[in-house]
Length: 262
Image (cartoon, rainbow, N blue to C red):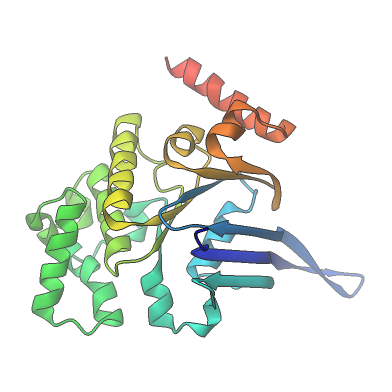
């Protein structure tokens, strides 16, 4: 049996919420949750706003500390890896490329940054890497000379995907990365991500409320409600036979949205 690439054990997150009767109180964003991610797999987390998806994404990407639990990458505690290793193995695509890409830098400079801080590549080698990755995401080397505002929204999202690829990661986390795109651009990006997964052997963690993309992209899905796992399983099985009322409601609402758009 294939060993998990990523193991999460009893991970939780609490935020300080002030004091009550002179005692410190907390808001719980994530109850203790456990799951695995396997090589070449896409695992989706779905749920409404406040379900804990973004908090989980930030913890896995190293942008947020967890309150308890363990995270193992290829069997090693994540804390045992140095910062460069962690940055290169797990990368993140954010929701809005307009705000996540520095408008003062040319695209080539944006893509070079991770290489500057995490590799020993020369400038010439970095330029070659940037050109190669631009091609992988369907952009031209000339796009590297543009500023983010000079290209379309769909192209900016491709730049965000390229930036996540720069250090040849094993896991990419997508936090609602496709939600701001219209249906045509979203379909193009989904197909691009699937193609990259096949060619590069990537594993994805997909945080999304768009069940259409989840159904098309993911192998397994986990349903979160207020920081708790309420259902999980193979994606097609969950869609075909949801067990929890919350999951049923999410799927029914998605179907109603699709019907209105037709």
